[in-house]
Image 1 (spheres, helix red, strand yellow):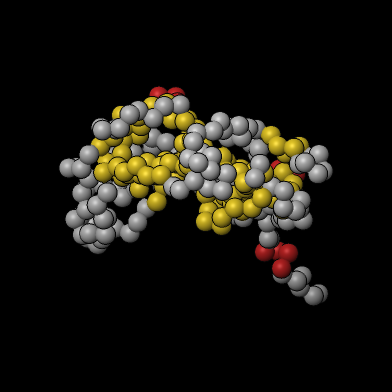
Image 2 (cartoon, one colour):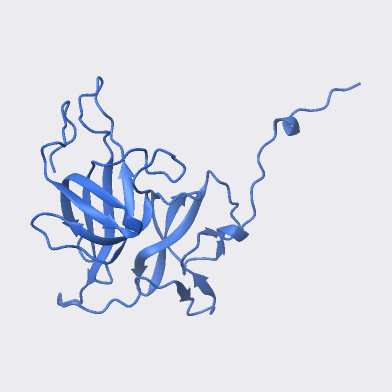
Length: 229
């Protein structure tokens, strides 16, 4: 992928690839690249595809009515057409969007939306041999000490914290460590990851966000003392 930090960054010429998601959604990525991260502590190798969105618009946020053809967050990748690579099929992935600053005046031939599609590709033992993956895709986890069962499909907050639509919630997707699910921070109810890193579900007490106390909106009249007669 060539550097976007140029005055005349164009995507009309570079290679395009198509990603086919469930429900008939197609995402065309220009100047795409594939990458793999080093195995994590459990031997999982995460892979990604990244490229410039060539057939859509909007910010990727779920509340942006101009977002097409897919929102940021979880999705099921059915298959791909990427020249020179075997099709990637049947993957539960996470989609992320990033919009770098464009030049002024804007000379780019695209809206400047960089898309990253991430998934757990395989798991290896200490010798680099494939081993079965038994945790990715699980929807619940039982704490080995307390016996509490956690639903891995919902959002959580640390016990004692208040829920606010502008705050953070913590959710699990794909990442584990030593048999324990890891939670990642999301902005409120959005499906877009923040950059706060990971926290273990076994670290402290967690409460479903839907059951956490809610901060009441601040009302101006509450802050104004009544006039004295």
